[in-house]
Amino acid sequence: MENSFETAVDAIRFITGGKALFTMQSEKTGAHFTFKVSQKDDDGTASPFFVNVLSGTDNTDWQAFTFIGHIKADGQSCLIAGRKGKPDAASFKAFSWAWAHLNRGSIPEGLSIAHEGRCCRCNRVLTHPESISSGIGPECAKKGA
Image 1 (cartoon, one colour):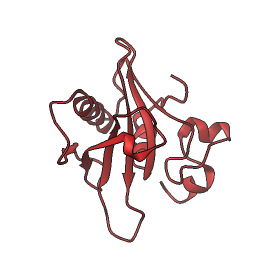
Image 2 (cartoon, helix red, strand yellow):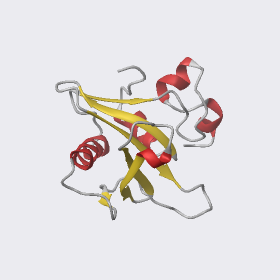
Image 3 (cartoon, rainbow, N blue to C red):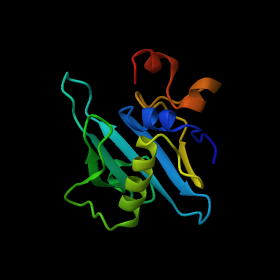
Image 4 (cartoon, rainbow, N blue to C red):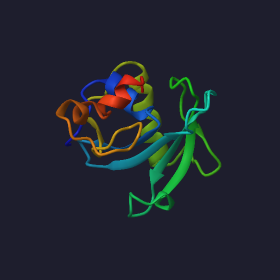
């Protein structure tokens, strides 16, 4: 997939950037899920990361996404089911499985994680090759996303 991450560190940094939109795809089966992971704007408190999965057809409309759970602010915790999150759903299992591997330092073989070309922190379109590769713009990278 285009804009795929090569390291677990880069993928985690992107996913916990605050406004991440990305797709995970099995290279073996072609199955894929598009997720939005967001964090409330920094107000000095450590808020959790909210995980949503695309359940409609318009990935630019928040209403096309369904909240499935959250990750504690430490970014190391497992996915915790929300009210509509079903731990037995394929999207929940896929995110949980991938997240566990990423936190152990690896992207599982046969899994692609790709962003859509926007900064994970401010959501602006990325134009610089290094920014496209990392998923974060140069100004946001300076802020420590």
